[in-house]
Length: 142
View 1: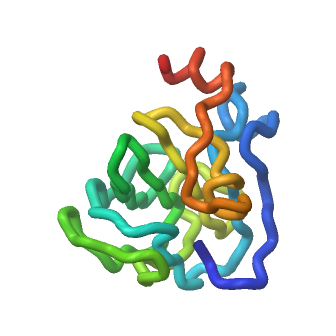
View 2: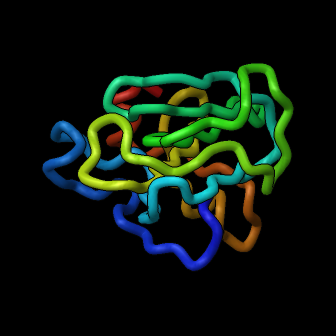
């Protein structure tokens, strides 16, 4: 995640013309190209590279089927297999992929299906993953 203060540009589950007719699968944090991006939890890097409309992306596995995905990055600072800890700088914000400007797209996934990152990040017990909503299960096959 970028450091505070940040502006939330798009919420999880929002409808809009940008996401191919499906609800938005993460949180979009507004920022400038080059802003630092930090790991939200301890884990191991499982993917670094270009990922279609998501642009330059990092995916970190946190165990128990939970992963965080960081997209539209201008630069990455980790490699596949690296161990990272919550708060480690892993990348720089950018505008790669299908975007209208620089921002961080953050997803929290449970067994590959996007779930609401808000609770994982900001709930009374951060780090807990909620079950994916019905629309995500229809799209991503829970």
